[in-house]
Length: 69
Image (cartoon, rainbow, N blue to C red):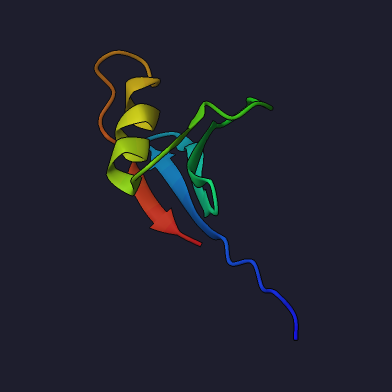
């Protein structure tokens, strides 16, 4: 028998392309901004992770579109 780790990934798209991603794993929802090596943080829910990613965009930016991959 083997253990299978399932990860889910959502890519955040803004008007000019990819702005970040959210990855679900055993820890929670990890937010990574495009072009950054370190993750922004890990959050307990997808909605909180989306809000965190949006909050780190330029002021006045529209909420990005999140697509699961």
